[in-house]
Length: 263
Ligand code: HXC
Ligand code: NAP
Image (cartoon, rainbow, N blue to C red; front, side, top):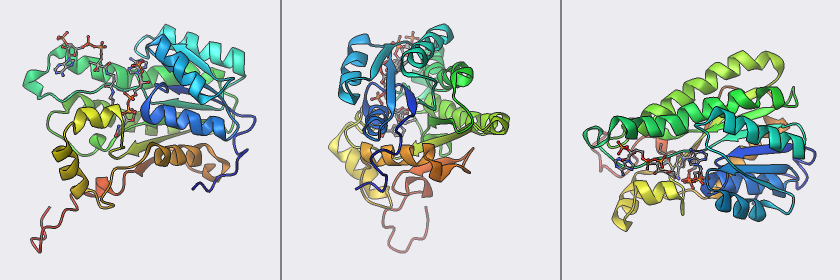
């Protein structure tokens, strides 16, 4: 069930970096269903083409690596040239793997920071002058790891923490021209590559679910609804915020402690 009208995003153009699978693809599909013209981008050209097809007949699938500023700029220019000036840009490309700091090479750490944090800077920096503004809206996809440290996740925790501050700084710098910059912090989302990597077994999934206040994984469609709200006119006075769409995960461990009162 959605509270949003079917033509809510008619006349808008959206670019979703990392929009060729998972949560970001779900966001792209929802924007298109609400009337937006949409481009999705990822490294793999075949995956990008298939994703665009699943978004809609007129959707663009573009191939670029967000670590390469020139490549992301060219993809944004192509989208803006073919679909029209951009109103909405989502930066969601990410990489992750479980490894302790001593099992992670300097290149392993740098790779994740490069994709997540530097990639988000690249996407936002490169899109700014292609935006139709005021009213343009940027969203970065972050995670609870930005705030809560997790073992085996030094790279992703550091990268996502950087993204949270980047969101706030850009909201301050670009607010005066009417550009809003926000984030979404999803909790564990069912059926995604991210959770296949972070909770790869049924036991791990069960243990994690037991700690979530709402006692379940989220759905891609639920994150997409948050992404619609943030770019909608209903959020016109919202900038620099990070919307937790996580079943309460960030509140802490909500498993039953039988009176221990400790977390
Ligand atoms: C230790 C590893 C490793 C592992 C890779 N590396 N996997 N180190 N344990 N499991 C190291 C490599 O050895 C190498 O270092 C360095 O990382 C770069 O690896 P490449 O394979 O060359 O990198 P690349 O081809 O650029 O691929 C990037 C990637 C890959 C992140 C490693 O997994 C990827 O493309 N992921 C994209 C999809 C993804 O991760 N989706 C989940 C996102 S969800 P050396 O020193 O050997 O050269 C998510 C989770 C939820 O983010 C939120 C949490 C924040
Ligand atoms: P996913 O399916 O692996 O999606 C990652 C996307 O980014 C793909 O389209 C991928 O396509 C693209 N990508 C990766 N590296 C790239 C690069 N260097 N340049 C350009 N595109 C790149 O992941 P997901 O699990 O849905 O996660 C999506 C987002 O939500 C991420 O930001 C993640 O951190 C966040 N998140 C996820 C969860 C979860 O439960 N899954 C929880 C919290 C936060 P290519 O591989 O073709 O490049």
